Image 1: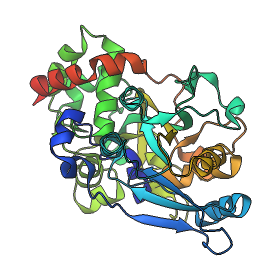
Image 2: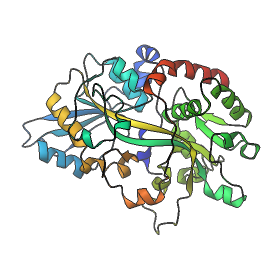
Image 3: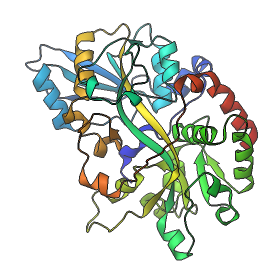
Image 4: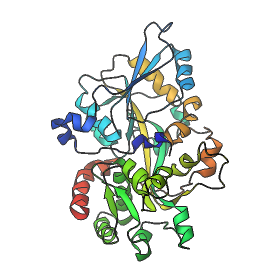
Length: 369
């Protein structure tokens, strides 16, 4: 699988309090990897520093277009997975490492906002973004950039060979015919793992989700630390999983896993070897924000504006395997043809996630592990 699908994949979501005592464990290297678009020549030394997760990706030509239009060169500081990057940004908020933060999603948005991570900014082009993804519309501290769905993926070949219909809903996953088939990620250490749990909360309610997980545990669900281990090592349907002889035909991943499996494959297959159980999906929305105390707020605003242009939006699907949020942005044919269409994903209000997330994670750990 294309490695860029790891964008939120191994998402550390440990509590911020724990991170305060072990920054290196939560945030990875404090220096992060850096990259630049274009040349500093002719830009007057103007640089916009974007702080993000490890899998932030954009075409060099697209970032060069931003430099051409604005005179700003882009520098990217990667700070681990999504949860780790958010925690690190909070811990360094008095001395921000950059101008823009990209990659906080709706499962962690309230944590970032409650800690005063972003200054308000109403981005140009925001009027072309649907209101249902503008979760901070009252104050405009966080600008929606993309969306995606965490869902159970299945190995088509496995189910075809056994004449067994793949599961499609949360309820299906606890049926006897799917015993010992599912691998998921630890809720306390993985963003997709957390999203999958939140999907079960949205489906069964605060009073029923733990009972559901007891049934899932009794049905042989396997838990690993992160997405890469789950998808590349344990899942039999991924290209990497086949080489690793993965033995689990069900995995918690993304609705964008199918196109990622076929990009670059010649001849193009009729369908992806990976399918999506669309009744198990939880919608994630990713945001960008102008970091409070940024050294280059003008450049930061310019880059947030640029992220809402069709140039950037139409580049994202095959760079970060996410969906654009801007109306009229066209997705690549391979993304549309092989990607799963999720009409009714589950979701939860960020305020409810913020109020109950830590208790839910503790309860899940007690119930499942």
